[in-house]
Amino acid sequence: MPETLKAPLTVEFPFTRSLGPVQGAFLTGLRERVVLGVRTVDGRTLVPPVEYDPVTAEEIRDLVHVASTGTVTTWAWNHEPRRGQPLGTPFAWVLVRLDGADTALLHALDAPGPDAVHTGMRVRIRWADERSGAITDIACFEPYDGDDTEVTVHAGEFENPVTGIVAAARLDYTYSPGRAQSAYIHALSDRRTVGERCPSCQKVYVPPRGACPTCGVATAEQVEVGPRGTVTTYCIVNIKAAHTANLDIEVPYVYAHIALDGAGLALHGRIGGIPYDQVRMGLRVEPVWTEGARYPDHYRPTGEPDADYDVYKELL
Image (tube, rainbow, N blue to C red; front, side):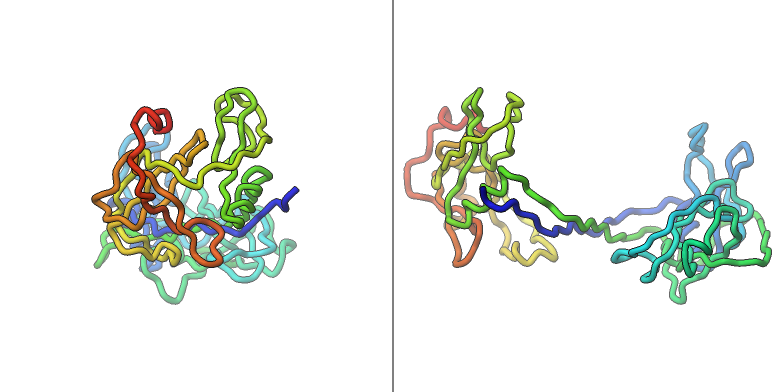
């Protein structure tokens, strides 16, 4: 049996969002070393603030200046900080109820070890040296024995208020494709495309999934399909992919669903060797491999007559 594969994968993209008057004031306040909460109709102060009361759903706008000191309500020790986390050395994740607030704020606590952390301990904010209007303006919390209970009403008015943020969303994980897809990937290394046939409905799934999504039964019979196929549907890409070296392709280009001969499911691939505005449903294509590649670089027209619609309509 071929070796089951695994590989590290990263999903990363910039997330852009606008801020309303409440959260905009909160982040602008952090830039100015001021922590703002919002007061509900029943008198509770929520930090971080929200624009609508979580109980009544009423809009709330009354901003309150709370203290930069608080009390740990619960915590967990982080033995191995990951990329992008607040501290590079082991630290505690803590929920801190700031003085004057009725809810807790999640952030990092800089402590020498888990024995130095306990529920009920007093802490204060350590501000970042450079602040821009983001939650990272709070570098972390640190233990504190003093007292600072200043709580005042605040108009939330600042010069140059923060109106939007761009947050880098990133997920690092290890992916294992499993038995069926590992066999599929190994076959691609030999420039072959292999699917698996369902013993019940007889459909050949490419890429294989290890089970038939229609019948719910396990699949094991391997079937080689293609290499030629038929374009079933497609789209024209007009936006260049950013920060993706293996998609450094001039736009516009075409990405299509391709039903390989003998397959019961269409897979996707880029269409090349033809002007983008000449790609069409029913176009017969074949894979183009580059030296050392483990999968086709793109598909190009074979020169055959277009496939009849009735041949591939069930694969749309």
